[in-house]
Image (cartoon, rainbow, N blue to C red; front, side, top):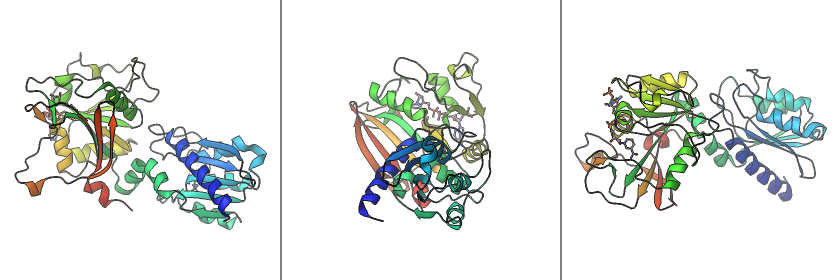
Length: 346
Ligand SMILES: NC(=O)c1ccc[n+]([C@@H]2O[C@H](COP(=O)([O-])OP(=O)(O)OC[C@H]3O[C@@H](n4cnc5c(N)ncnc54)[C@H](OP(=O)(O)O)[C@@H]3O)[C@@H](O)[C@H]2O)c1
């Protein structure tokens, strides 16, 4: 591939990853996918993304956007085009019908039903290349890829603590440990996942709403399913009982069983929002894949620790690998992987 073409395709793939990201939280049980159509001179003539399960796939949207200009074009797409008929027809056929010359995709489709798209395209005389910007494209689809491999949703445990790791003061007060920017970011995170999860303890103490809202209180377009785990009764006055904006599921059972049943319901990503008891149970069971900690520059010296475990010695500690450190307003956000996520990297 000539270097000018390579540079254009790289730009297009970056754009496609950005388009894919817009579908986060809305496409499950499907992956997020973005696609860009390039004319032979490298100009962008069409683009699209998979906006919701049951809706048209990214390639189909992008081809429709390009219209007749798709003929002889290169289609740059974040995931291998599917070769199967689900709720919509196979993307491979749409590409063949549009008479495109070349398809560049980032990540191979690991699912038995949809895989094999590359071979179908090649058999139809279309030039196919894979692997361009694969890491970035896999990252945006991380939850879906993880769920395909494990049969469990990808779990991100998020908490806000003081610099000394306290998530609530001894008197139980815990609201707004982190700053406004961090809290706004958490609302955006909620809008990108399929479900948020807490234990009954958090609901009974904090009475959180657990919806995804803008700073002025307006609900974001996508609301994750709220999942409350535990046996205690949640009073009818609790905010999670108000289902005018988001749905709530009350479940009792072992974390793995709860996650498996959520997966069966189409949930691919879960934002675990505590509290320390439920987080400890999931961590011990190896069910937490990623940790996002917002550390506020305050010290308490007493109060609840972020996680409750029965660890007795240092060698029993859960070792994490930091993947990102950044400041959010006045707080520090640390993103880290657990070994359960690392072991499943491919
Ligand atoms: N700063 C933060 O980021 C943050 C976030 C969340 C919570 N908090 C604080 O955390 C405190 C609440 O702590 P918490 O530990 O009681 O809350 P929690 O972890 O939300 O709830 C604990 C409950 O989860 C249920 N559960 C379900 N499966 C479990 C399992 N396998 N193992 C253990 N428990 C299981 C149990 O409910 P049943 O007993 O009903 O069966 C248990 O009592 C509050 O003070 C709150 O403010 C802080």
